[in-house]
Structure formats: structure tokens, C-alpha cells
Image 1 (cartoon, rainbow, N blue to C red):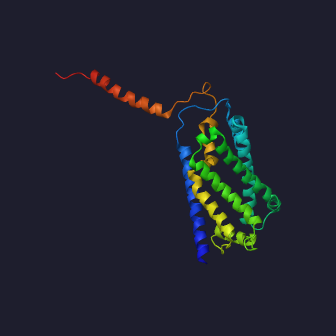
Image 2 (cartoon, one colour):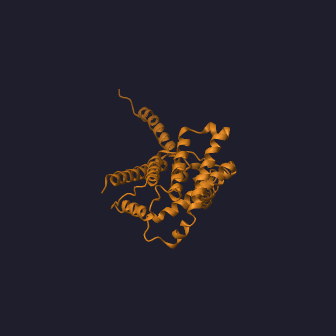
Image 3 (cartoon, one colour):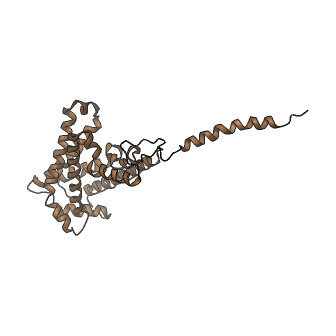
Length: 265
């Protein structure tokens, strides 16, 4: 095993470990955080199946974003759609042999890559050109967009740009990635664009649990989305209120009991 393979192999395992532990820790935090108030965002469903339908609309259509800002919705939806196809296409590096469905998706990978990068550039321009978006944007927002653009851009360049008339070999990349997944690392393809692309993806995995990308898991724990709008039909008592009431009533009962005892002498 070469030193370069060892470095990128360790980089992969460390990145995956940080991503998995960080993601699960954040999801655990979201799930264990108390939600003592009934605060569904109205108009909200009045039944559990309605909440499920609402979530399907949020996850697959971005309904609330569409109602709030259609221009931002267009950029965000195109980005997520391009990202979905890109991720599905990259499954060919993990699955052997490649299925017919993935082989068909590979034929459209160029279009999905261009859509992904174009949508990211569009979102970046919105943040810079529109005052309201510029005002609420943080440095981390720009860093995340630039990181994603870098990943998409290097991925596209590795397909079209020849470095010394040698492109990243798909079989070599597949052997390397499959070897990492099965804990039998193969030699890393020594192609600059692939190494940059791979490194940027690993940096994204490390940054993912600490960024706004955690909305991918946090959306399912939003009390404004996952609560049923039934405060009149069903009264919900905060468990904290029960504890406070019991603690307040206990000291008050003691003097009464003491007063009923007969005094000595």
C-alpha cells in the first residue's frame, strides 16, 4: 500500500466516522429536546395521517418554501433534484455489477451535474444580489455554497478535462471506493482532479453535522411541522407542570399536619 493510498484511506474512514457520529448525535439531540408547547404552523393538519401528507409535501415538493419565495424555491428544488441524480449515479462505484437502472442514469449524469452546479451558482447570486438574502447570510453560508460548487465543478471537469491525456479511470475509481467500503483499500487513482474532488467530498462529510445541511434530518423533528392541530379537542399537560405542581403542594401540606397535632403540656 502506497503512502498516498494510506493517507486518503484514513481520510475516508475519519470523515465517515465524524459524519455518522455527528449526524446521529444531532438527531438524538433533536429527538430528546422537549417540545412543551402546542405550536403547529397553521393551517395545520388535524390528524396524524394529515401530518404524514404534510411531510411528504415538504420533503418532496418543498411546499412551504414554494409559498414563501418561488424564486428561491426554484433554485433550491433544482439543486436537490440534481443532487439526487448525482448521488444515484455515484452508486455505481459502490455496487458491482452495475444494474441496468444505474447504467441508464449514467447516460444523464452530465445533465444532472450541470443542473447541480448551475443551481448552486444561482443560489449564490441570490445571496449576493438580493438585499434581504445578503443581510441574513453568514460566512458559513457562502463557504458551504463554494464547497458544493467546488465538488460539482471538479466532478464535471474530471469527466471532460484531460490531465496529460489521462482521465480518471472509472474502473480504478470503482476499485478504490469499493475497497474502502469493504476494508480492503486498493491503490488510489493518482489523478489530481479526482484527488481534489474526493478531498472536497470528505470535507463536506466532516462539516455536514455542524452545518445547516442537518436540516436533512432535523426537518422531521420540527414541532411546527410534526404536531397535530388539536389543542381544543385534546388537552395536553406539560409533564414539567405536573412536577412543579406536586413540588409546590408538598411543603404546603406539612404545616397543616403539624397544626392538627395536640400540643404538649
